[in-house]
Image 1 (tube, rainbow, N blue to C red):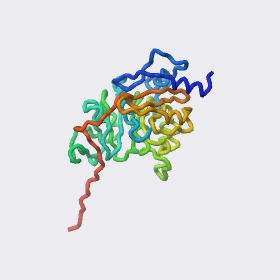
Image 2: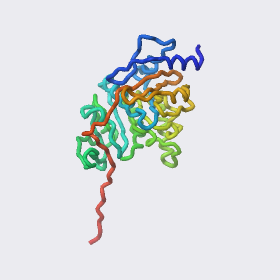
Image 3: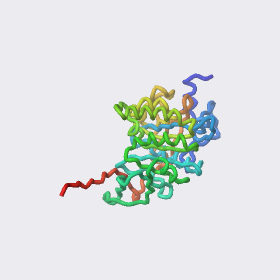
Image 4: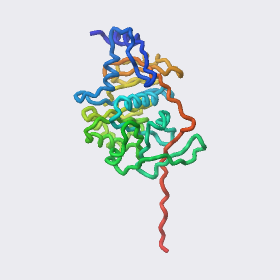
Length: 307
């Protein structure tokens, strides 16, 4: 068995060709001494009931391509598994990243009329895109479409914890993407939030056997609750990211990742002790005519006074 340094050296030598459509790693003709590429990327996509699903987290500095990696995984999922449901939970008050994929590839779903949409390309005026309302988790799952990204908005983003818990009982393969996971499971939470994240850590322990793939991103691993961190199965390290104690990749190797705004940034993908170097080369640029954000606007309650 080769030692840790030899593994890293072989992985550094790996030169990959990227599928331009998905920004996904493909095998080159020059096979390295140790080829972990097939096992690492194959694990993210396989549908073996015995192996189950994965919990994947992309990390990196702002502008390093975290969201691009997420969207790339999303497109790959839509193409590979068109008969399975894909869900995406985005941040409020910032441009919705799913819009970069094209209008035909997503639908908006909201649990409340308080969630409203605004056009950032034209002065931030309120707009009224097609929205599928839902009343509860069961209604949301029933109305979710196949073959598109179902962008779901809860007034409280932490409600994604309970939604993923609900998906365990659907007895189907499901795919959940969460932008900025630290907003859902922040480090140093207290009170009810601490208890809620404790519940989330147990749910994440179940997702592999329950066939729920969870993909997310975060700027810094330290922003994420440690109980959630310990459940990560697949790590994507992009420029500016910091390794954690569970990773075998050297921080120096991460610091040496090349940034390329034209061809995409380099990154490492690690599945437990196995990892490979890759590049998500599809650049998802904003559509200047489709810059939308979602906000929670509480409706004013009319005061009732005695006459």
